[in-house]
Length: 339
Image 1 (cartoon, rainbow, N blue to C red):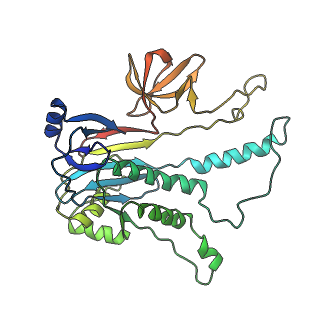
Image 2: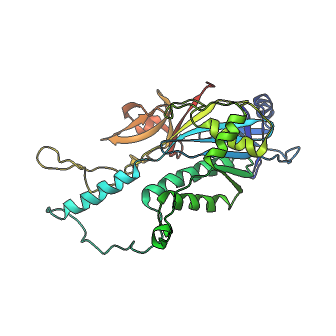
Image 3: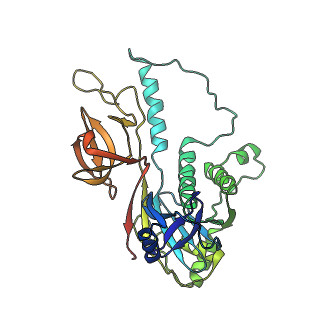
């Protein structure tokens, strides 16, 4: 697995081998750092060459999981399998129901107002969250890799003939897709491939795609993202790197008036928020016992810590003084070996 390299101005250069990166660190020519689970180095001297090869990112969108592959003609630098953001639609519906029920109780509430979204061009919240997550991953990758092209498997929705109002905003899928395409064009070339074209390229390389879409296998989603990147930069007939970085977005419960269900005595406790005794939730901290973890909620004067690998709660009795803040964070990750 190659190590990403950036210069003194944080501009990405071509990745290097782990052995060369170790030599740079020992001689203090480079400083190591982590970027969302990826080990990188920052050069402290002027690089010997700034020649940049063609590097492409293949994107295989999905409803539950998605694949991303960073590849040049000679090497596959990274494969990412990411979980999609799927909870926003239900959260918005719950918020709407709670607002309505509060108006029938002796409870603080605002008066209903006119629908300000009528006849407006907008992205629905669930659609916006899904496609913004894809863009955040691409922005994360382009900060450490010199990406020049993004190849996306295009998705299509059938329009209705003669229905101008329907065709204008007929599919949140199409609206979100076009929004993402416009954002990608701001920093890289955009190439699209239809689903059947991806399959043809995969069949030509005699690669199999797994039917187990929820599995953490290279063949589940990253095989298509790799095929898309390889279609643009070429260089391989078989994947040279099947290792994956498994990424899951963290769900933050925003501050609510109170919990949904009343407690004994008809008293509802406070719920939600993004701060835990001075720590922003999701932040990476180093605990004296549990090591590298991320912050969850808090209980009285203690905070909860969770594992970066599977999100399992490690403790809910951690003292803030025992945690050293490292950086803000909005996701958890784990490395998966080649299948």
